[in-house]
Image (cartoon, rainbow, N blue to C red; front, side, top):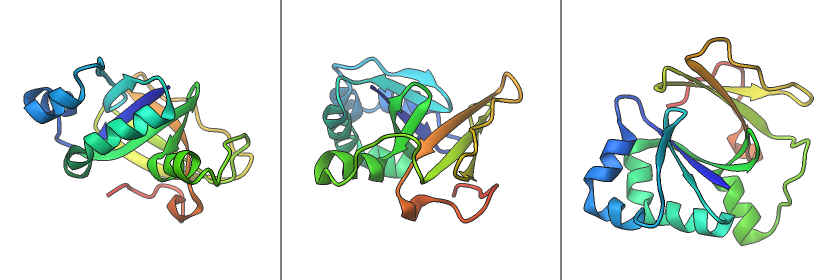
Length: 151
């Protein structure tokens, strides 16, 4: 399982986390690598991934747009959905998932969020500088319409 930490605009998340002794301590057993407008960390399980996110919660609030958990190749789930799956055991992830959106990441900084309708496929990137991620989420997280910009 990979955890993807999406950075806010004008933040070099990798440098921020490496520069801080607290985050370096939390990441001492992992090998973060730059990817998709943030950093990616390979984890053994969803529980260990949620624990790491908890350890980095101050950095998540200050420097990150979102934390995504890869549930299968190319498909991610949001942090609230991951917590429902792991802690509440109220959700079992299986496709096709009803509540989905896509992140469109351009040049590693600009991130757009668009709702995916049932049956709609996640688009293939248009250019080499663009990455499109399908994200499964809770019903409360689904954007109201296409093209909604993430704050």
